[in-house]
Image (cartoon, rainbow, N blue to C red):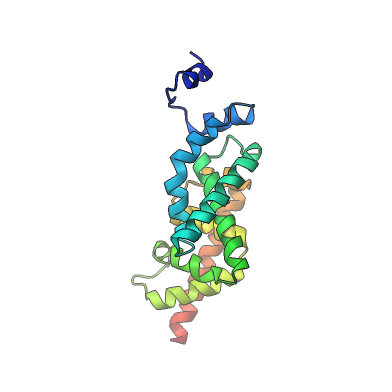
Length: 196
């Protein structure tokens, strides 16, 4: 039975996200997008709320994310997981919004990463204040793409393969950027401890 027939009978198929995107990329009915949007509505709003505190702002950003997802579906590559690709759109949308509002993107990202990056520090015990200061300095020194890489790896717990596919970079480039970020944050953390 074709998926088109299943929809005509109002039975929702259990298609994967990637299958739904594939159908949409090949001219499938827009109601396939409704299934994707329904699946990820709460996820996207929760992720947006992590960048802004207002429910109204998070709701507006969620709507903007889904518009961008719909408009950019042709750019989705099947090697990536849809959810990882979706997160990159959430990230860029929220960061752009914060920049326009002149809010500190460093502070928001620091808050998101602080607990996860404790494992990256090469010390037996971690002083949270020094870690936050080191993280702030690190975020000022790396590119937005490197920040996204850190968020995907440590906050979203994505695999390296999923990250490289969604960010359209090689695995060796991702490994090198993560290694450099880890080395930088350790050096900055040591400097923070000495300065305190």
